[in-house]
Length: 74
Image 1: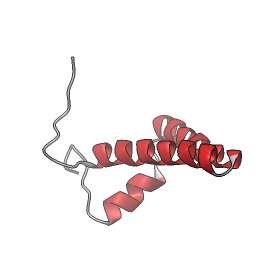
Image 2: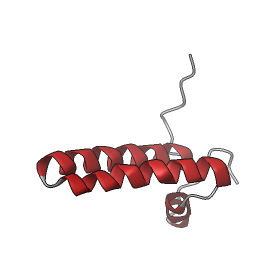
Image 3: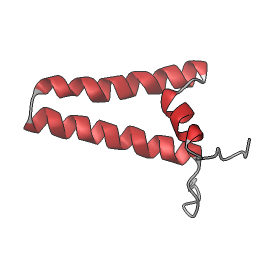
Image 4: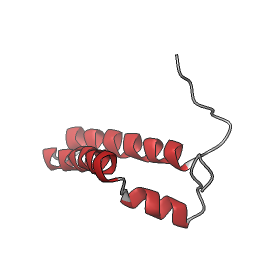
């Protein structure tokens, strides 16, 4: 079983946290406010697919700009 290190915050770990957080937030808001909030987790999923195919992630650019570094150290 693979288990990543939890003693440091890498860019990859922060992206997973943000994706999970926005997905849960969108689901909660869809149940509590309006079903249109389901667009938020859909956009998160779309962004994850785009990131997997192209390697581009707007959240990674933003997090890197504020100082979060990738696991590989580049």
